[in-house]
Image 1: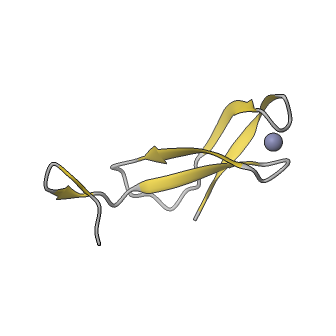
Image 2 (image 1 turned 90 degrees about the vertical axis):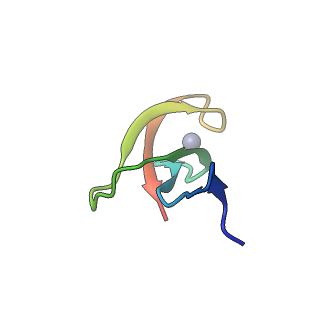
Length: 57
Ligand SMILES: [Zn+2]
């Protein structure tokens, strides 16, 4: 089954994992297709602080 958003297939789902503990804390949807990996500073409750989160697939 494919997930749809108002009839439009969702393709750009990315999961952001903490670079330190590798915990998958966030998921984002991106319409843009790019080969570069997303890196965002976000709060990780495992590390109890802001860490770099890297896109995983
Ligand atoms: Zn962490």
